[in-house]
Image 1 (cartoon, rainbow, N blue to C red):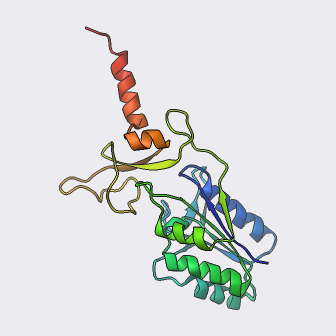
Image 2: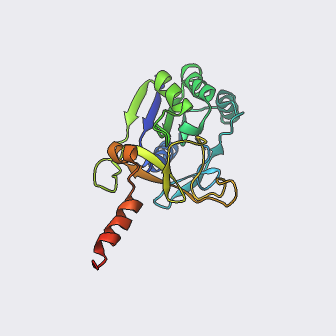
Image 3: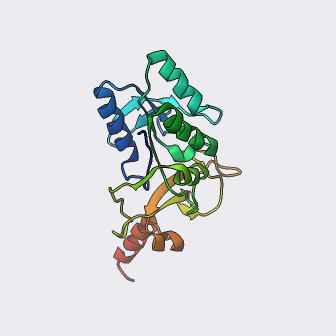
Length: 216
């Protein structure tokens, strides 16, 4: 029986690496499937921070994943699986389409993504996947906050300052924020305590340098 499995974790927990490994293992067995992603930092491919990348279908907001799966099955005569990375960026209705792939086409779906955004709130697609998935799996590779505790939150930094409001989807290292001057956007993994306090590793380093200065 086919299964919709949603695997989730923070940034740096190995989601894309796992997606690539699943796709490699299944295709190496001669199974037919598709590797999908959306808003990957390298474009229309799944890219691991370990340096491995593979071309993938770019899941735009208007793409019907069930129809895509039907076309794939018709073209190849079979469809055994879909591997869907960056699933938090999909539309909620696309999560329902993935469920149809499992129920009506009897193909396994491996969806992988973040659980919450920089505001600590569920992504719309993540919420829907949690509702419809057959299996929900938290990744066991634990990323760490700068303090050494387990990282549970993805903090957004704009010009070095943590923010709690703004557009849900803003990729790192872009120049899309700021009314006058381009803003530097980055992300940092924090434990809940430091995420709530807005205390980042960058601030911690600055504090340590200040403490290291000779007292006058």
